Picture 1 (cartoon, helix red, strand yellow):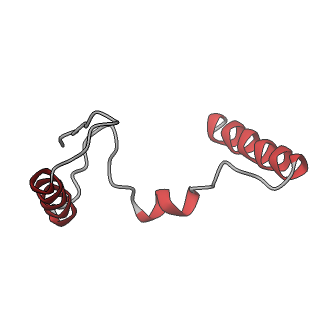
Picture 2 (cartoon, rainbow, N blue to C red):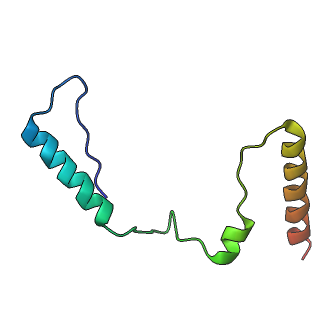
Length: 77
């Protein structure tokens, strides 16, 4: 994976714009690469996934309580 940075405030020439567009299009066609730090999730892991944003504090508290209970059950096995 490459990170390309451009300095803000500098105008890009049409040639540089075309090169940048080609680079982005080429990157979009490359396959995803998973590594040990961000592996592909299994179906079981995806089922356990929960978003971290909540509509209200009560919902957050319930989710935290459920997570703690799940950890305690797993620890007692």
